[in-house]
Image 1 (cartoon, rainbow, N blue to C red):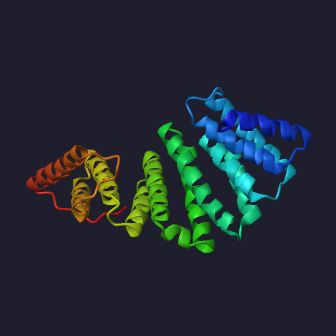
Image 2 (image 1 turned 180 degrees about the vertical axis):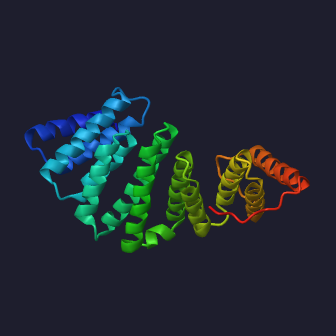
Length: 273
């Protein structure tokens, strides 16, 4: 009869009481992690995750230069929302294995962690904190490009870059940094011009054009509405979080605004900012 994971944990616990070894702590941590995603275990998922974290920490104390333990700990800390500790663990992994394959992978995993962290902060309306996380993620992309550029050319690497710049653009938009947001979305378009970034840019341009109109800067408003219309025409692809109905509403708003201003004999003016 196969031995259960709980029984394996009991055996490892007995072995560790006799001879504490980093490899045994790692093996038990992996079992706790496995149990944490099961629904039929007698060990509650959160308790299993915490036990796995403690075991990785014990393994690291015994073998502080084994980057595998550190990166496993970092991934688990990130998954449980312990962001500050995860930041430190990823940084330690990169320090330990900066020029090795695991170190290269650590760079990408750290960027993924910063992306998730920034996304959660933005959803919680922690704008300043999300800007910092996304900016750090962009810096991490720069480090990957210098040390392991092939990591960014894979399908996952391209998606990581797109999502980081998308998050940065949305965070800048939330902080009313229109110019910075457009720059981030333009980076998305450089990576993949079918990414849907053109929608974000058009929406921003339409929003600012509306502000100009409210400020009685009709000529500048028309110029920017025309740019937004041009941007909408560049690509039909939408970001994953934008519905077709929302796109149609934006397009109608732009078209109606242009029509109204042109009928009022407004001439588009060169944009000054």
